[in-house]
Image (tube, rainbow, N blue to C red; front, side, top):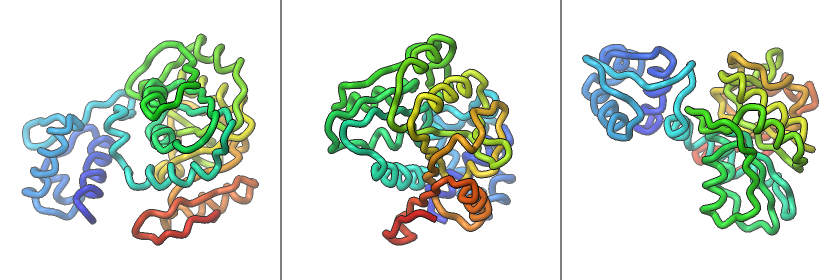
Length: 265
């Protein structure tokens, strides 16, 4: 495990438990307490954690991490997923993005196409697209909420309901065959449902940690998904097989140490 992977695991563990002591983290990660202290110091300097006596905690709301924190988790996976997602984009498309860090990673990579129009309820994604030189960007408007930095509420839903898109790249907090796609926030689930309804094709982009997770609010049943782009790890094979039995096309994005081949599962 390299230092970046170790710090991601450290962040994830603290996020799930609220707080953690240095001794606990050393036992969980099988490293020395000195290594944990060094990692905590780096994460605190990056404003991802805050120090408490003998340990650390991460700021969160309703089990949901802040955008900047989530963007750093599973970064290699998100970059590989984003690269794979570009294969589903053609010039002259209208592309929708739900709010999220994996969808942001896709938006960050979009270059070299002609006449693309974008629809999103994410302020971060809109700014990223603008910085990359894109001009046809439609923000839904609505109430701004953190930690996801998404626009939600009746106005956002009204706007999205009057826009038709060729493809939606959808980020989720969890995906389960029975529970469907879920998120911790009820308002965000509502706007995501509208984005799904208005898209000709729905593509879920998610790292391996989202499989089998059931968050508070259901976005939509899994039957609404046309394709999933994810990364291959041993424990997700049963989930992937279940999706394929439902007729969902599942693509795996290969990480750098897994070779260069990328193909449907």
